[in-house]
Image (cartoon, rainbow, N blue to C red):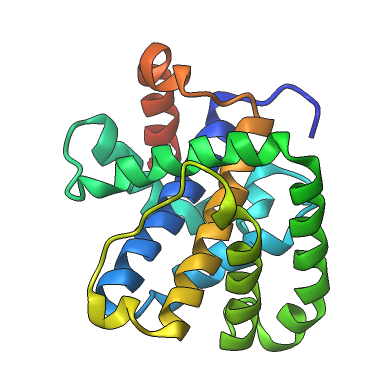
Length: 205
């Protein structure tokens, strides 16, 4: 992915990020994810060599929930105040991750090691989520700033829920990597906000 990409494609990466993080929040609060949205997030982890930004997520239509969240954020209608903070933390974490080549290689190797299981069982199968959650715990969770997820202590006290949260965080980092590869930066939120909102609105129709 080294050609010039448009703001439209950058918006898809950002939508993938917030859509995954909304599921992190949902799982932390309720112990349950939306199955279709979870599958979109986890499938993206294994599409390392996708031919286009949209293909990472199985098509732009799969990102409608995330695009809606972005539109609400850019028009000051966001309902979850923690989501923007979580997104900022993941974007900052990804910058540290991108500079650590050894860790990046470990994460990519760990993902490839699970690719066969994901293809056979499904990317959101509990065994795959447990493995990817463990991979996140062994690697990215050691970087600073740590991504702190708040939620219901009843669910966050369960090992399977914690593993699922970490696995979805890995998917969020995947989207953050794509965002950076497409030239995205925090300056876009300040200097290109209208352009980004227009791209989001165009996708939503």
